[in-house]
Length: 323
Image (cartoon, rainbow, N blue to C red; front, side):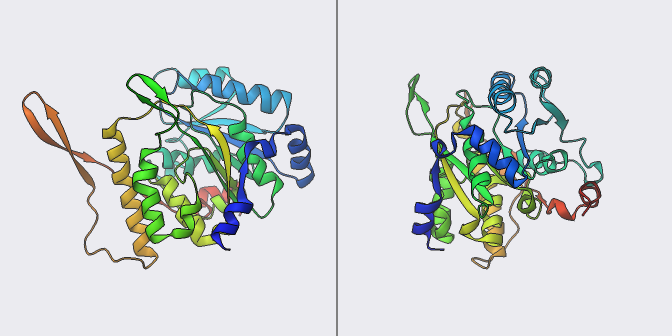
């Protein structure tokens, strides 16, 4: 598919799917079920209002969401208790499919969530959103319900950032603009038409998600985009404008570590796809520069990236799903 044509035909606005009653009707007619999941780790400040909004608007008022859950990585700040109080199912990533072992990171939680969730359509929402609105769910899910030939949907939005103690309207998404989009432009130009490949609000059909690998660390979104593109081309994708997303902006140090993990994911896929050849193993640790009263120093930080296989190849998952 010509990427400009795709951009015109498969870039939507959440308003296109704002008739939630009609979405519920269409979901039932097509026999779909929708699971919404939040990966959590110490998000007590925001997780309650997100779950409450989904429950009230998309379960009680309009039965669009059939399952609401969190996949928790052992929060210690009350996140789990808040989630239960808001009616969400709670799962712990280290308890799911114990025979495959335990890794860490968001990608691990998302991969294992496929085991816990029941829907044939799955939507993931980050748990640190401060201005959450149901559009973050129905915008993504709507494209999957309405368009049967769309298999994976990414949300995009303006991302305000704190500057000088003030919230300015744009400037967030620094890793997206400085790391991922330049690399996609260079090596996967079709994917440069994705406005925010790293967005945390996205979803897909189980049949697709269970058939692709997941990276456990910072590279999960990048890996999914590249693997779904390899499997289904640009035609598999759609993207939806969710307007504005406000969350706590990360420090430059945190973003630097994130970029390191994403680069590792990108290089692994570039080699797989025959776009470059690695002449040495990628390092496990990232040497970060720090400045203290005593001067500059180097702090070596382990950043582990593990590639989980397609979950449909895991025996326990196959047994549960009857495949």
